[in-house]
Amino acid sequence: MIDLKNMTIDELEKFFLDIGETKYRAKQVFRWIYRGITNFDDMTDIKKDLRQKLKNMAFISNLQIAKKVVSSEDGTAKYLFLLDDENIVEGVAIKYSFGNTSCISTQVGCNMRCSFCASGIGGKVRNLKASEMVDEVLIMNKDYGKISNIVLMGSGEPFDNYDEVMKFIKIVNNPFGMGIGVRHITISTCGIVPKIYKFADEGLGVNLSISLHAPTDDLRSQLMPINKVYPIKDLIDACRYYIDKTHRRITFEYSLIKSVNDSYDMSLKLSNLLKGLLCHVNLIPVNYVSEIGYEKADNEKIMAFKNVLERSGITCTVRRELGSDIDAACGQLRRKYLAGRVK
Ligand code: SF4
Image (cartoon, rainbow, N blue to C red; front, top):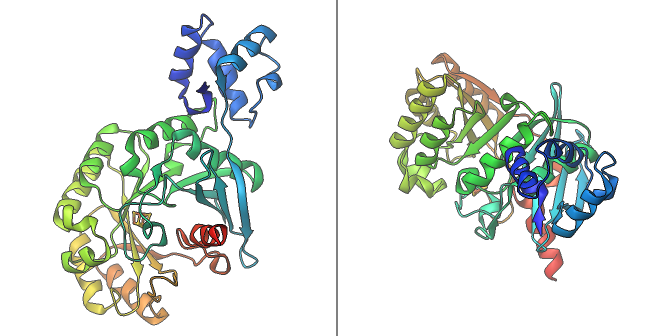
């Protein structure tokens, strides 16, 4: 059986041509899928015999919500989605003044093992299919309210699941589907350098965000093992290529961890590293994860760090802490849920 939700519009057109139907059927079915319909009998503008034909050879996949918690502080909602094979992934829906944003997972677990992240603790279980990523957004769109922005910052490294992520972008961007503009989609990577070059060459116009978290190789390799494979110089060279090619600004994510990467010296080193690049820095007070034990930097340190960057002409924001009452750090809720399930 073929999952029609896992197809781009081009693939769906080919599918209908291959079964002796017109291309136009693809647009009709695509529209129904992104209105949340999963039963062919509900597709009222498709003739009955074609609906029956589709039922015999295809299906439309559909994730389930295993758990949902909503922050009483700011309305942020965290979802655990149950996949067909009983695996669990997280998604988060956040209210901003410019609209609702959904933060989705791209893999079950993650192999990158960043030391501050709960998602990396158990390693990668498997890649998500494009349809599963699409469903995370569709479900939040239906349950939480219209989603206008998507960030690929949940569990998983998007560039370690490159082809399915590119397919996901094509699907959610299509005007017959959800029609979410590429400028409203952000991919965050821990720094898989060859994929940054490849992504720059795609010419998609999607926003790129780099998880940097340290300005020196020594410290970054301790925090993020990927740095041993692709050190900072190679990463920044790839970022320069991306900026030259796309003329788009890159965002660097920097989680501030108390007494680890929040010193004055680190802020100077970061300023020197990024000076002159078309970029923005997002400073993130790190979320506490019990298995890891990092603490977030003090507020004065965060503001001092920000000042140093701004004095070098680097634009910089401090990320609002959202959903701190609902285990909002990447991977935390899933780990707790799984621990409860196996008891
Ligand atoms: S921060 Fe991202 S890349 Fe690093 S382990 Fe967590 S999910 Fe993976």
